Length: 60
Picture 1 (cartoon, rainbow, N blue to C red):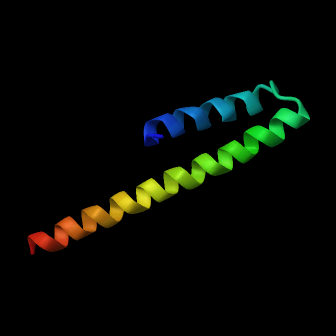
Picture 2 (tube, one colour):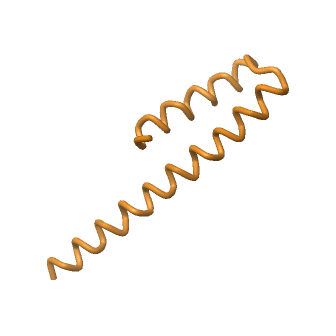
């Protein structure tokens, strides 16, 4: 899944929670999905940051 897709899905989950559109069972499932998506985004950001740092070091 691409970073942008994960962010879009997280925004959907947040919107559903804010609008009280989820019952308690759905809320549990969506929160677990949000946790997975947050981890995915963090990992992608970390890896990108490391790649950028490596490229900048190579230029020196």
